[in-house]
Length: 252
Image 1 (cartoon, helix red, strand yellow):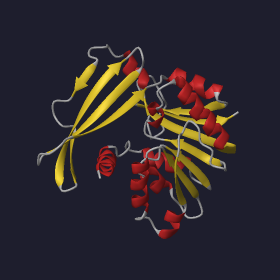
Image 2: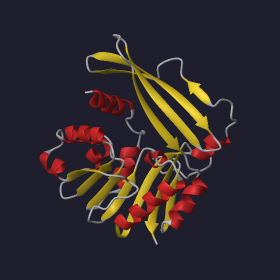
Image 3: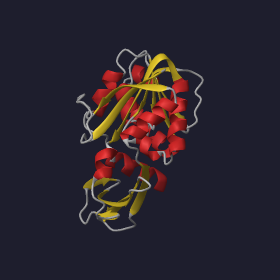
Image 4: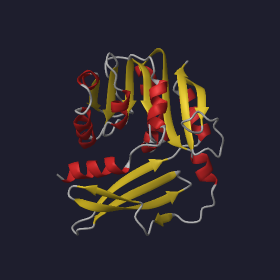
């Protein structure tokens, strides 16, 4: 029950970035096969599901995949049957087929804590793409963050960032962050405190953020060419001050 509750709380807290589902829907338009890495609780695979389109969602977390299976039940039958969920590692997966589109949304790349891991992921994506297929992912823009003055290494919000209603009670959600700029690490702990009393829950999320030049170099090493870079999900041009970095890349 604890693992399922934590997966549910995670899902309620992390609802994606406004505009990202519409962006990936446009990116995948016309594709007959789509692979999502870091599919989590199924938010995006549900949005991308289409009759006569294969959508595969891969994630390493069994509880989040179980939540994804529950969310797929709300889809029309033809759409739900088009989705396959797989437990696996985005650094080293082999699904026995190739895809026209591969997507890695919502900062999922930053969960890979070394350059070696990120490179392994990109190489696995290239191997999974159809000839002429394309890869898209988004992350928050680390360039602007890394240039900020290093005022504090630990940040804890004194007030809840959000309140959630789940499992019969209201949970106040607090965010605690540890910043290590030399290592390019941002480790966050989300603390869920029930107002009715009882034990708080904590969900740690470790991130190793990558600067834009690093990502381009890693993609090139993996055999990709960057086709486009956007600063938000409306398609604005990427600049060092953009809030997000969205990259579209094709195999070379």
